[in-house]
Amino acid sequence: MTPHLVAGERLKQSLGRSAEVAGCSARVTEEAHKPWDAAMFMGGLHEVTIAVDGETARWWLDGLDEYAIHLPGFVLSKLEVSTVEVIAGQLLATIEAETVKEA
Image (cartoon, rainbow, N blue to C red; front, side, top):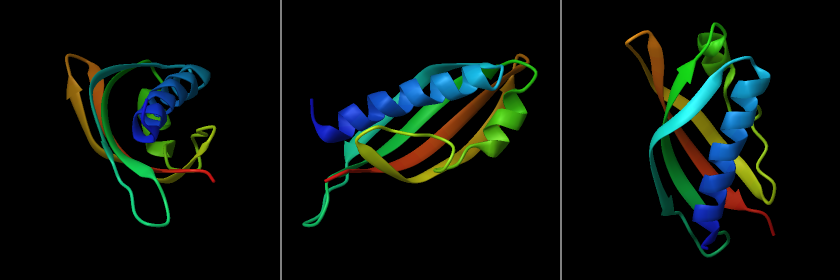
């Protein structure tokens, strides 16, 4: 599996664990991952859409950034909640992230 796909899987797992710790649940509904490489690094660009349930869902989404999530083997250089919609009482959030493989 290529590094950007490994980072994408770890991102989804870490988001799920973080949501659970915050008292809400997160389920991935859509995802896209593509390589983001240069001469000095190997990385990935990620867009993950998640459905979030629970009383603390909005609070959890508001607190998400690159410092709130840990990805073993990767540096999370950017994590941003780009959109949040309310659909049938559930939050649907799109998260954009950039990862770089650790040396």
